[in-house]
Amino acid sequence: MRAVVVEQWGGPENLVEREVERPTPGLNEVLVRVHAAGVNPVDWKTRAGGALIEWGAVPAVGWDVSGTVEAVGPGVGIFRPGDEVFGMPLFPRQAGGYAEYVVAPARHLAPKPASLTHVEAAALPLAALTAWQALVDTADVRPGERVLVHAAAGGVGHLAVQIAKARGAYVIGTASAAKHDLLRELGADEVIDYREHRFEDVVTGVDVVLDGLGGETAERSLTVLREGGRLITLPGPDDVPAAPDGVLAAWVLVEPDHLGLREIAALVEQGRLRPVVDTVLPLAEAAKAHEIGERGRTTGKIVLTVA
Ligand SMILES: NC(=O)c1ccc[n+]([C@@H]2O[C@H](COP(=O)([O-])OP(=O)(O)OC[C@H]3O[C@@H](n4cnc5c(N)ncnc54)[C@H](OP(=O)(O)O)[C@@H]3O)[C@@H](O)[C@H]2O)c1
Figure: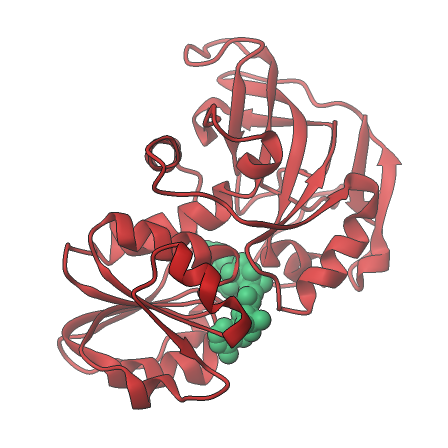
């Protein structure tokens, strides 16, 4: 099968297309024919030699996939060949999502929302599960709570805005001005142009901050939280500032989550969650996708088409 693999750690030019052996599903595993593969910052961070991910013998990047079940291994009861599925299998271990086929534990996948194309569905798993696991599982956002989403127009942010809104929260997002109309369309109650204002000068009394930026943004976010507030920071564990008593500050790492994917698919089918796709490129142009993504200005998601 065709796959894009990492020739050696470094720049996007190290992403090369190769013929590799098609994997076979083992016990409780599913072979998925990939139609579209989502691109995430962790893809280029690992390609560049990022330390968080452990690598096996054949370097491969990519986790987000949407496709069709080609075959199932012994023991799989929840899928049959021909089912349309989406997910982010195996993360943070290698999955090799930039390929014509992937093998996934069955419960690392869920039925693809029928109303979405494979390109749209491939934009969801890692970013939407991150937002879900941070806002719902960890911060337990409640109706009426004030939620501040940093980098609200990005891959995680634009989904987090919608998920927080669906939980009944009052949502404030930071983004550059050109992205404010989109954020309002997605349900943001307030938008802050971070180039014009320091967010802590214009917002207070926040219950939950979802921080996709880390560094000093995480530190400054503590100042807007009220007693009982929760700060979830995403880039890495070193971005978590020391929090005062009564405030939670945590890094969470997204994990494969069948039930979470089903919740996300349900929100899509209810018309309360939609992925925004910024750029679509063929698999062979994975290097270009990384170049664009690494500039850090993406609105929504970048997706590769495979089949
Ligand atoms: N812990 C986990 O499990 C986990 C999971 C997913 C992602 N992450 C991490 O979370 C971070 C965000 O991921 P992502 O996929 O959302 O990234 P992304 O899509 O690449 O984010 C791009 C967005 O960031 C915005 N942005 C950049 N600087 C900003 C600032 N100072 N204030 C407000 N917005 C700003 C940009 O908007 P403008 O053009 O308006 O600046 C752009 O829309 C990454 O570091 C990623 O590795 C962690």
